[in-house]
Image 1: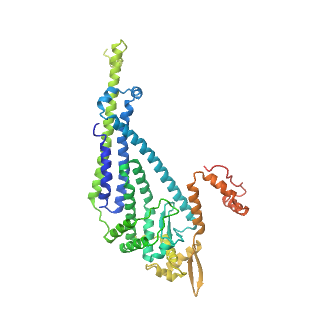
Image 2 (image 1 turned 90 degrees about the vertical axis):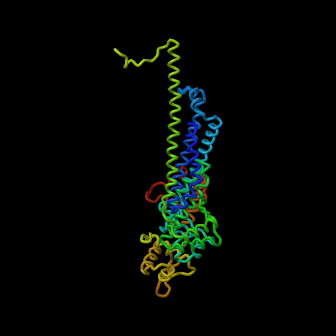
Image 3 (image 1 turned 135 degrees about the vertical axis):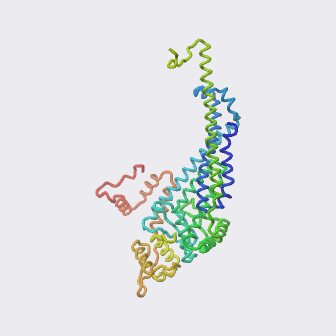
Amino acid sequence: MRFSVYLPLLLSAAFAVLARPVTRQTPPATAAWLLSAGGVISAAASYVSLTILSITLVARVPVLALADHWSRAVLGRADPVAWPVALWALAALVATAAAVATTARRRLHELREAHGLARALAGRGTELTVLDSPLAEAYAVPGRPGRIVVSTALLQRLDGAQRRALLEHERSHLRHRHHLHHSAAAVCAAANPALRRLPQAVAEACERWADEDAAAACRRGTVAEALTRAATGPRASSPMLPSTVLPGVAEVASRVRALQRPAPPRRAWPVLVVLGLLLAMTLSVVEATADAHGMFEGAEAHRVVAAATSSAASGGVVPVDHTRATP
Amino acid sequence: MRKRRESGGLESEVLATLWASQDPLTAAQVADGLGTDLAYTTVQTILTRLHHKGAVRRELAGRAHAYTPVLDESGLAAGRMRAILDRENDSGAVLSRFIETLTPAEETTLAQLLGLGRPEGPAPSLEEPAS
């Protein structure tokens, strides 16, 4: 109990630190999946730790312990969790649960908003909707089907091949439902503050993913040129979709550099490192849960025995298993 | 990926090419502006489809049609209205107050639009909360 309960927390912190640098060594699609799925597992693992730590506090409350037939004496001996730690865990559990609820509600609302916008733009039956605007902007609106919105300023800044690169980039966002990766990362960050940089990492991976998809459909150089041209000159912050994040100059520069290199090769080791970490995390959760379960079982058994002994001493009837009595 | 270029995708590229130009373009000019070796007839087919959808206007320039893109004003306005409704907590209240500002002609239009598919039916009550 002493150590195993903290292991999921430690491993999820390790994931938070290692995930981005390690997944940078993989193609961006793999990176996005490892980051968002790993984030969900990390957040869940840290919740298990916090929950077990919190339960040790709850079990100390005499009324609850009696109601559940736990022996407080045995719990106190078996459970080395100091009550300030348990209290801290309970506070963290409550606070992050509230943050998760808020974030999930906000993401759902934004998703509904995007679907509404996609429906509003669907009337004409074209995938592309053009905004007449002097500011460059382009975004994908998830929906069934999703839509692409681009401003006239941006279209005029690009040549034919670059426009195709831009459209392929936005299509990749829609086709692979990148907004769901973004939402998962946002919820994970709310669940575990150690993962607060995850949404940024997932967003970067998704942009790179869309760049690579565009590069597969066009030429790498064309995508890089389109990106550079789109980033130079006045740009809009999207008035229609508040969640749209426009790339900063530094991010564009790093994406252009990545496009100037050949497509990232598939490597086994970064995937294995992350999967190994996640496997260890899952095992640590199993171990911590089993430990906690064993502790409460022990406490319960001790209490039943204690009750039986005390009733026997006071002349009461000790429950006897008559079915096994010898004739 | 390169092989699976759907016609819907080409449609967007043709539309984007028209929008990037200051002047109306003929099918041949669009095929040039696309930056790919796409058959003229394919471009012509896509332009005709876009014309049917109301996404482009066309006029005769000499012997060929010249195409101008048309802004999807109503779609964009509907998108903005949708966004406003989504941002309000009580969209029912917003709608009911909005209805009060409509002219009789607009009310008739709205009733007709909502009554589509159920002739002679009463206009849906806007007092009821949308569930």
